[in-house]
Length: 301
Length: 301
Image 1 (tube, each protein chain N blue to C red):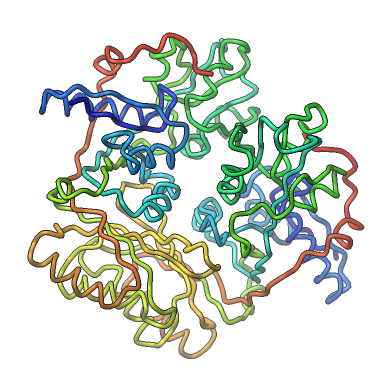
Image 2 (cartoon, rainbow over the protein chains, first blue to last red):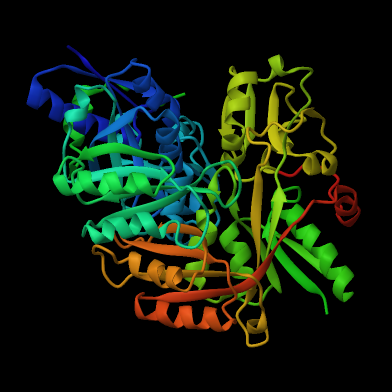
């Protein structure tokens, strides 16, 4: 049976690169063929899996420089029916793609706002004259490069290969260790719930807003000696000052300790969702294997 | 002496509207004239005050639908020399500005990514056919409207008045209570440090990453009965999984209890910054008074 994977397109995005790395792994492990489906937004990619249109979705959830991808967290909470099956941490190395002869000839730099932020010191230093223009993805602006030599885009080496574009400067991100964590999401079915791993992701709202309300769930975790590796607050969207909390715990929810802690958390939260226990792996994209699998021959849009 | 205020421009942004409301208040209270200075980005607005170019800066810090404005938090931590003097919560009501005869004629909607997100359900329902294109501010795209009747922008009633543009649909934000909190920031000088109010904003990093590391500072606050009205984590940008925490406390740091709690927090944090104690006010923008103060006569870039 073919495994279908939704990701934030168009072809050439970092999300596609993560999805390709996961596809190669699935094919090698299971022999099942994999088909990737580019989606225009992160919510649409996640809805594709929630509605059964695709087997799974691969979405960015956190970047080491820019922090949480809030649309991923908000959509996960709203849908309430996707589980996290696996997490992959991929290095993000940005390049400056352009037909310009040198940096001095560049007047405009296009890219996704997160990529522009991740390169802001480099841009201030090397391209102080350039106008920085946000786009929907790091691949969207590549179509403009052929028309105008004064235009550049921040994108990946992968996109440069895919669309046959020159890289004027490599590794322009301000932090050398820049990386993004991606989640592999599946619909919550009995077959899926047997997943297991060392990290558990939860989200909860609090019954009251008073001194110590957030302290109670954190105190439960501390008493069980469970490490909280991440906490992120998101607005409930009801009123300013009301939050949901997304937390990552270094324990399996299937362990005895994990089950006891979750039971206690239920008593001091309003709504508590367990998005699953899963493993986290570092991945290094394989550009030549990725390219062999894709057919892009011209710039997008 | 003239008070100068830096804000995220160009003219017509919600930040300008907040800065104008604050200006009217300063002029009425002190009789001092106020001059506003539009800056191209939030970090540049904040740097203008840090370097003494302007008396103060007004920046968005949190929206009730979209959450924290991470660039404001990150820049505050990096500069380490600005204090929060006051906070203002302003309703954000988006309109659809266009020369189109009706919604069916619209093919493209431009706006800042936060404004597009705040109206996403309205857009899916009323403009499913439209291409959504991100811009740097809610004012940036207004220049395109005159050239093309098939184009619309999400912006404020204030921007529509300022640039004399028709509003095709009012109050299109998905959440009726949509509002944004703005901070009034000043450089940290002895004269400034006498500020006071009911809310204190702190940021800290943790000495270790282990079970209960975050619990210790939160436990200090709970023991003193101090309510934590907000917690937001941001990456340290050193490595994935290392965070700073921005918290708002419902107490003055100048009170005896506040001073004792801050003293204890120093013992269980790595770096602790006190951004000041200040008051929070709800404001309702006065469009006619604002318009009388500004001179915009044509659409921006």
